[in-house]
Length: 327
Image 1 (tube, rainbow, N blue to C red):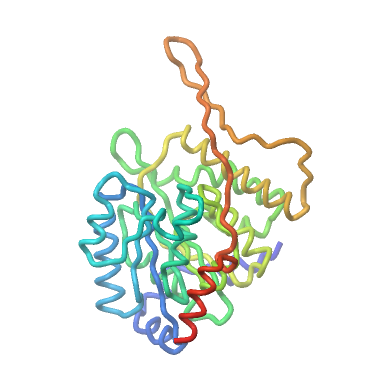
Image 2 (cartoon, rainbow, N blue to C red):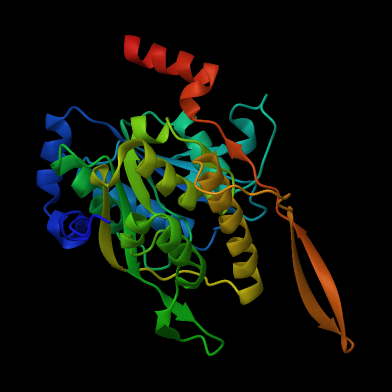
């Protein structure tokens, strides 16, 4: 394991608070930057995220060139609210509509590559209650100020909300510590240096994202880290401390389903890489139980694994990219 990576490639967002410097670096490199907000029923938080990012990083400092919302099919007012703030809003099903349709965050992220134009793409979850523009400029800093780093990932303290409506300083990141970190420790110790490998905020150069597959669901972050590591190594990756992130927490059963998909994604990757040889069928149903009238009843959750191929293999994307380059 390269133990020096965590020292040389770990940053704090305050190192990049000089936004004039970031704007100058962006202009010097002739870069454009897109922010993608993947959504599903985020009417309570989407407005604040857009307002802060637009006012701070488009109006005050011309760091972002566009904000794009990719929605999974919200049944609340998410899309209506987002459009009222004059940002591009797309339903994921309407992008490349001839392809079979899937639901999931990874699907939104993958399709964002088709409708955004930035040389750098930032992905930020839309459910952050304490949103601040550091979530964007912190991730952009290593990409703009280094000629080596091509991908940056967030980490933070994740206080957990309990039934008393109070925030407690620890408790977030349970799937990371119970599932992802043990798996990385067993097979890919270098990746254990990511403090929060499942964090939902990351940024990278387009040529990184367009050349890796995207799992459509919860496995997207795990697969992404493994694929970037295998293709380009640790040196192109960085992590940034964003201090604190407050969001809605999921119950244990929901986390179990998340863990199921992450484990499947991981097993798929290590088998493809020839690190293990799985000789039996891997099933697609997560089995959980609930107690009803003093009797345990099984709950079957079909969690089929599917991933999109690298966007650079999609003919429509290649045509669109060629048209953009020729202008």
